[in-house]
Length: 320
Ligand SMILES: [Zn+2]
Image 1: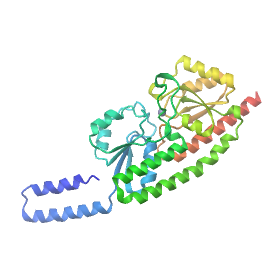
Image 2: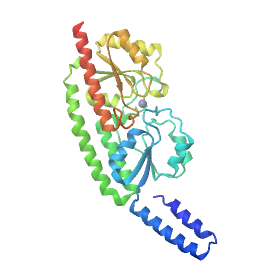
Image 3: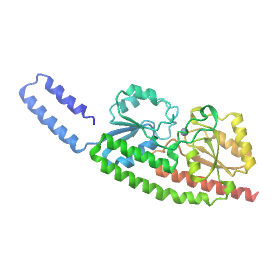
Image 4: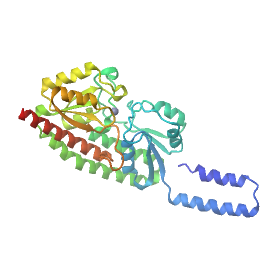
């Protein structure tokens, strides 16, 4: 844990030739300062994006201050870290990032940080490969969208926190298992709702191919405009391909993501006459007070949005 600041302050005060009374005062102030620090000792954790920050807060409870480098709503794949991001991370006890090529800026960022402990939190998940574009064959980075993988993330977070703060390990382990139980309790019934939809309507069409893990979890077939947000521009060919599939399979709805331009998806909806289901959330939480302030909310809101849009799309086709 970093206690360098009060420590350094004390040493600086002693290194100067202050008169005796000032030395006595400094000793008093420093011991008071140290006592204050010991009683409210919280580790500082920096995460690359808001979803990992929320998961980490759930596991850390009162024992850590957790901040996210990218803000709510920000695009994370091609994010450009600022000098302030570096300053914020340099005095952290732990840096948590996703890996699987999600944060394309992370290698360079870590190089600047020196010896801060860092953990790639997706370690141990079963990756799904990207099946189109220049990233074909590489792991899809959005692994947190699958419930089983989310459980692995949570365990990895608990382990990482316990490594740097072993005395609070029992808290981290308890919080992690309670968090996992809470997620299952909330998300599993929603999966049953999706399974109850007509089989041929169970499609998830989106802007970014970011929902492979969620689609697999929910038993949905997947279709998207572009494979990954790092090159988030729908080419005429990509739009054509999606339109053709929608017509071929009678797909009832299309969605887009909260962190990108939704116009191409809306264009596909109006050209095919299918229901535009609105935005889904994947790469970022909303700010506090927004629709998805936590990971748990993000999954619940997404699954409900998908279910309602497919229902509306089906009603629309039946009325035609
Ligand atoms: Zn993404």
